Image (cartoon, rainbow, N blue to C red; front, top):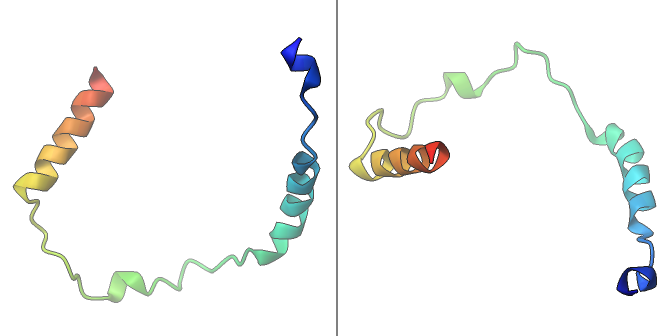
Length: 64
């Protein structure tokens, strides 16, 4: 059948090796280094009618 002709992906082994190597790229920061909380807010604290419509539309799709 058609499924017998499919070759196995060798990329899965590469992904497993990448996970082991990727652990060196992670840097854990202490919780005291929160610079973004001190920055001044750029956006307004008010929600526009377009943002409100998008949020309500997304919620309606989730309920349906």
